[in-house]
Image (tube, rainbow, N blue to C red; front, top):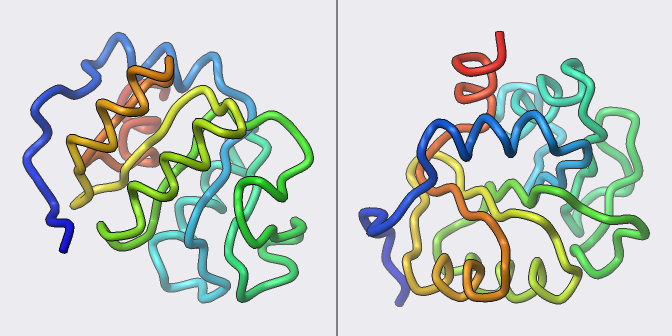
Length: 143
């Protein structure tokens, strides 16, 4: 069983700010169509703040007016950031997919940190943010 961990190494504010400013396309893994869920609120916020938000969840065909894909490999365009809203056990597989599709970064939401997967992503050239909310960080650093 994979456990949530304390991040051994994490992106500092300058790297997070650069990632937020340079990224255009963010895939939200584990998005929900339910408006009260954090994944939905964050995706809506990202869309409202000029990002191309790509929903990824095999349960849905569309979320927030965007085509929803079953996995990262099905997304037909480059992904700058993979924003993860899944359980900790799913993270290693998601990181493998992010590497396969040559995403620019992996972002593990608040409460999510998996050091081994993070190191694998970094070794493949991806930026990694763990245990931070992309919405909170955007509001804090970019407003």
